[in-house]
Amino acid sequence: MISLICRVVLLGIAVPLLLGDFPDYKLPYRFPTAWTVVTVCDALAVFAPLLRARKLAFLAGAAVLGAHYYFQKSVPIWGMAYLAVAIVFVALPSSGRGDGKKKRPQNAVNAGSR
Image (cartoon, rainbow, N blue to C red; front, side, top):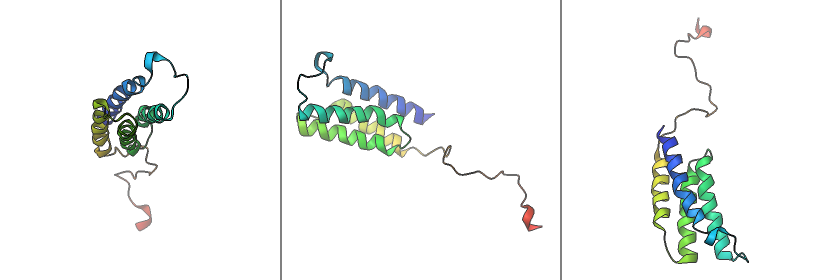
């Protein structure tokens, strides 16, 4: 349940980060490299919590901070909040569901040992 809450919080933080890159909600006339890299990193931050691998959320948060700092010479507060929640999200223990391993029933008697 906590994992689901972290995913929703990460999405809630990442969407305003992505929308902040669109001035007046339109695409720029020419796609400068800085705008493209920052937008791609912010889009990765939006889609990373939706994927199965949790580490991608942390990597996306690091990419967001790096791209914003390198190209815009600023570190957004929302980016730091995203990275903090991503660290908590990655540190959570996995539930073990869907890992592909078959579980042995607890009450099963080993028939081959008799």
